[in-house]
Image (cartoon, rainbow, N blue to C red; front, side):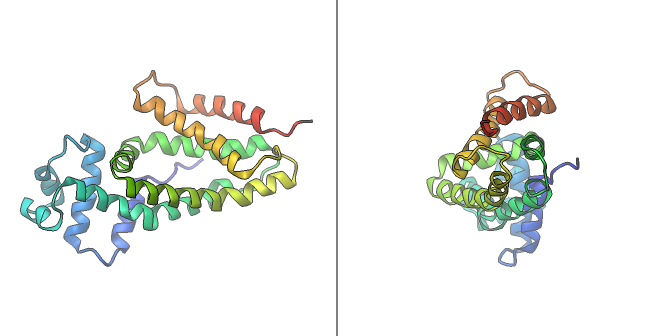
Length: 217
């Protein structure tokens, strides 16, 4: 299985395509995301950002009043383009593959997303910090994410139901059950609980979901 595309790659693509930003703004935002992920928001200074972006510190302040504005500016592309693109790629490469069993579907989805989550933990922490302290971002970002999840999972779940491969429960509850396992993986990582091999976690999660979502005989 090919490794999922890194969030930083999607971000760089979004910066390249955004014609509303100057080149210096793009450099500043890319540097900010990289440093926030590497050092943490609190431990990153505007001097650090300016140095990594290759601009004067005054240039950073000229375009963004403070780090909070930078954080908001970093998250906006996720709402506008990155999350929908990520969902579309995930749907094409994993969710909408032809399968003959529920376990095959779950393995495709869980393995891909677990490797994605574990490979992008530092950037995900930046995103979670942003939505934690900015309610308006949380509403917009979560809303976009929910629509993206529904758009890719809805048809796949409906097809599984048509084949009698999954329990006949509401689609939104299927999403909730599956997504909660990824949130559990994030919870484990963020709290610094003892690490487990990703593939080992995938096996346990797939086993649990297969038993819970399988149609009753």
